[in-house]
Amino acid sequence: MRSLLKLWLFVLAGAGIGIVLTRDSGYVLLSFGNYTVEMSLALLLLLLAALFGALYLGIRLSVRTLHLPADARDWRRERGARLAHQALTRGLLEMSEGNWRGAEKHLVRCAEHAETPLLNYLAAARAAQFQGAHDRRDTYIRLAHETMPSADVAVHLTQAELQLADQELGQALATLKRLRGVAPRHVYVLRLLRRLYEQLGDWEHLRELLPELSRRKVEEEDDLRLLEARTHRALLERAFFSADAHRLGMAWADVPRVLREQPQILGDYSGYLQELGRDAEAEVLLRGAMRKHWDSGLVETYGLLETADPGKQLAYMEKRLTDHPDDPVLLLTLGRLSLRAQLWGKARGYLEACIGRNGPPQAYRELGQLLERMHQPEQAIEVYRRGLSGTGGPDPVPLPRDIGKAQHKRPMLDEQTAPAPQPARSQSGPSSI
Image 1: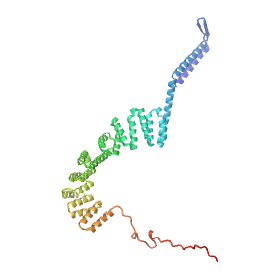
Image 2: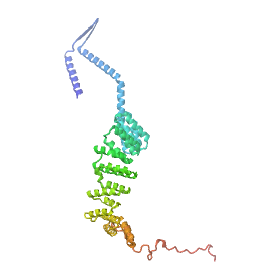
Image 3: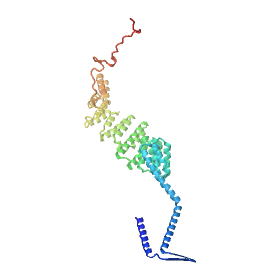
Image 4: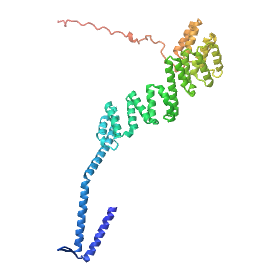
């Protein structure tokens, strides 16, 4: 718009000057020493305009000549950036199509001229990873860090992701530890560390990481609670298999109070105490837990304890029978406690009641063993048979009554009739008449 306005002003000025000069062209006399020059005013103005134009063009040409090297560099830079952008776009398209080799080629070819070579090298590292070229992958990671040292977190996060994807757990752990030193509050770094510790089974470090995961809200609250419970269960198991009672106690002391009331963790710890012969401690824990909430797993574990006074255990659990009269696990537990208290008739009654309520298979075994000791082998065998055949669930597949027996005109596979022998052919030719 400005250029058009200037052009119109120039045309109007020229037209005005032309109108004036047509009326009176004027007269100009120039004298210099012994020389004089006479011309019209119009010619003088024309010559001055031509001189001004020549000077202007000369100056512009000189300036452009002086700036020619810089202009050439700018042109090459712009052209390289344009080609690099096209190569990046093409490389990303190749990656989305799964052509890793072509993607790597396009991404690396013009990376030096790209505005953000970091993106080219990181994408090329992923393409090399998919081809199993770990050396080239590490080279691209190094080049990405050299091109933009300030993007240390992004580069090493990509490196850690690729190492985790390739199951290079030791290298990934070193990378993530270095990253945590650089960015201790980075949510994604904490998430990758959590995943890596789970893969390594490094429950000690994962337990130390749990408070930070909760503070930064790295995962959903429910997921974190499940992870915390799983971590402490694994630590309890590891302490138990170490055969060190002190270590097991320390692991239980590290469990938060909220988690100690969870049936799974409490059941695990009680079972470990039982395995170590510390049934009395387990009995106290389970009794306190069952006062707060009822859990079938804890009830079954309670029935497996061997304390000095099984009758006391039996009396305590019989009080719970009022609130849970049809609980088959409770009936099984009462049967086992009765067996330990040598109350054979009561044990038989509880076990039969358990079986009558579709109790677990262990009830059949306990009752069958009791009947054997009571010199009732036929009834014991019947109980074992019922336990093996199973109770509840869908009906078995119906079978015919005469299975395994040959039917009329329908022989079994191994009773197929042999083919009739063919008459023997004479070896001699036809007799002549």
